[in-house]
Amino acid sequence: MPTIDTDRIKENEIARAWIQHDPNRALIPFAIQRQLRAFKNTISTTAAIIEELLKNDDLTIGLIKPLVHRRGVARQRLLNELRHQLPGANIRISHKDVLEISWLTPTKSIVLDPKGSENQDVILCCFLLAWPPAPKALQVHRAWAVEIPDHASGRLLQRDPQVDLRSALFEAGLNFLAADASAVAPHVGENRSIYLTAAHGAFPATVIGAGTKDGSRRYIYARAGTWITDAMRGPDQALLPRAMPADATVALALWRWADGGLSGADRAKLLLPDLDMGLPPAPCGSLQVSTPLKLPF
Image (cartoon, rainbow, N blue to C red; front, side):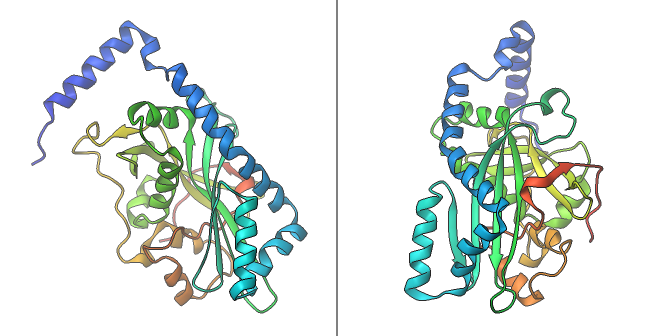
């Protein structure tokens, strides 16, 4: 039988009472807002370069294709050049031929018709995966895993002043992709929270069903609402569990929506727990919120 944390309940009641007395207490402090703006400025350049790169198929192929086909010193030189061009991104080669890039993109609200708190700037935790499905060929998929509104990022900076915000946002994205798909499925399109580990706490988040504008692809991702410390999280607010075994992840469920792709054996390899990222298939730049979707499992 779960225990009741009376101290936490009392603290929350006091906080709510103060907010009713002084609504400004619910706002993110100006100093934190300035800190968040400065952080977003540091990631915006890399995000803009990647978005421009991916708009140009010839440029994408010319830059990425040699990386997945070459070996040895030539590949390492190309990797170093790409890391220099994209200083805010995580870049690596996994399983011999798979290029992984992850980055953070600050943007306006991605909701088609935002209402209330939906109408705020956000940071998207984005991923790209590229590999050669055949000699002289290249396949590229990208998407985002988590949408972090400025309010949630601000609460993280406010409640954990020593946090590495960049690492925490990547951690949340990777934890969503590595989560047990069967635990996520009941939450798609529902107004109830999952809890994504990040730094010394968690993002309470909802699972959004989305699709491309032309309806050709479906997708899900997590939308954070705020950030709470481990001490603030109650006994009924369990963290989203990681998939065991690795072939039961959210990332693999998303991949099964995509046409073609890797063989079953390669997919399993790519979803081992030590991998930096999962396999989100839909184009990052064209996803928009649509009607709730059901996962195919």
